[in-house]
Length: 472
Image 1 (cartoon, rainbow, N blue to C red):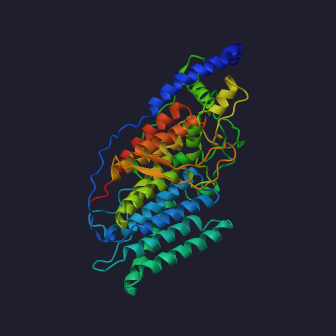
Image 2: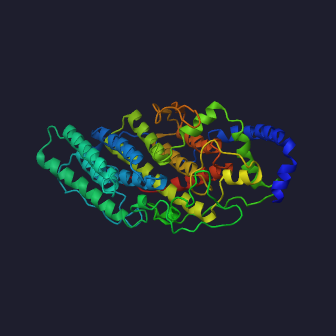
């Protein structure tokens, strides 16, 4: 190729160019890492003395922790599949207690095709912790214990055991009729939501992550098999799934920069930047790349990382059960819709990863710091979902919520890169989103455009989530 001849002819000066370019890019990169203020005005904290908030958030937080573990340990829960599961878990939790929230209302009638849900009996008492416990246990069994694999048996045993433990902890001094009524109501909520979920396009998505019938498009700049060796990309039709929020189904798709072989083109420049930065990664940059990698099977996936952060906020602020449930439904719905929007864009353009482009035009022996995931690059899923979640959590908990993310503390250092898993601290949610996005550039698997577009699209998706009427 013409580009290859040009690169080879300048081979003597390549190291010089890399060094100079890396310095220039690093300055730009530092600017891009600055935390930008959210466009959303945070809700002022309000004391809510609703019946559901008289219960602690322990039931909600414990089930979130359990779902994160189930996602990590259950085969087939790739990032899009996991995001959908978190959304269903969050929605189930919220709807199982919303009748105990004085100022809140159900999302039935607001979410796509969800017209109605079971209602409580007028004038009857409910124990909202028991209701939430029964609802979550039922939904977790649907999602993780009714799959046709040996892991399902273990999952069911774990879910059943946790349900019993939490029920026993919350039933002391509660009349049996209230216990029975609360459990029945929670179970009916999970039944109805799961039935609704079967028609969204993602039902049992864990069975078809890599469809053999999918034909990978071939054109200049198209995604190709990367160093992981997988020839079929992950979930190529996920972008056609039904979003939870109708407005997110109609969002316009952003365009990537135009493919070009010219050494002076924006296209070439963005891929060269990845190559240059990967040549001189600092130890902290390596740790950031590994901290946010969140590979399925090894972790609870990127969406799970955001769900974990929502749980940090819930626990740190010691909110009540009702507020916790609202935080989780907001976060879960955001994750689901962010992955659908991102995947729709990925498979419209099928953009190549840095590994392919750099090897073709710059360095035939180059490998990114972190292995490229098996699906197209534009835009970044990490950036899209973390940008969206940061916007939603900022609106809910405020712009000055400082926290420490200890999600991976205790893991031994990464065997392939030697990077350590050290807790990371942030001044606000936007800072975590920016770092999550930048981690993919450090990893050598996304160009700057992928991250910037992902963050921007994530904000748009979040605004549609925030337009839902959670309050009466």
